[in-house]
Length: 55
Image 1 (tube, rainbow, N blue to C red):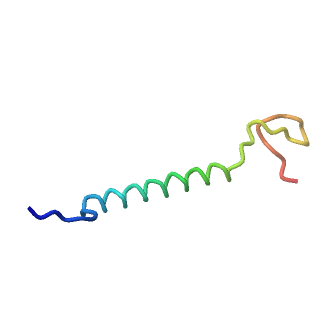
Image 2: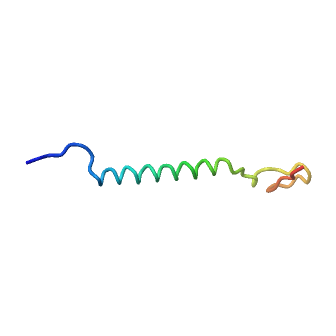
Image 3: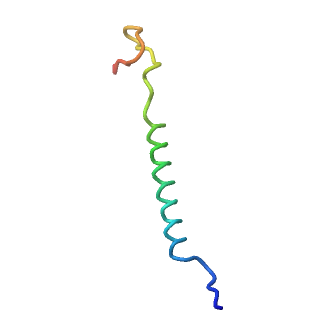
């Protein structure tokens, strides 16, 4: 019996898939953090919540 040590092609494919999944997850998480949630903010002009005046 000959045993081959190291990673198989299937393991390499699975590892590559996991890396891609992680990159997509973190990219989406970063995008969500950059998007500001204005639903709880109060406009300084009209004192209503849900929007902000630009100037």
